[in-house]
Image (cartoon, rainbow, N blue to C red; front, side):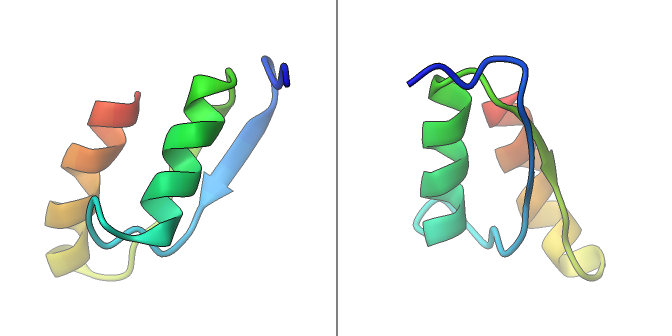
Length: 55
């Protein structure tokens, strides 16, 4: 499936074991440009490294 050029906003990433992370990883493999959301500084420290990993 080619989703190149599409964009997705990912909600609910908590760590590498979360469903949202797995979905984001698969979308990235198919060429989707990703954006991530988080609530609060504590989650920001968790989500930013994961979002950088996925590009």
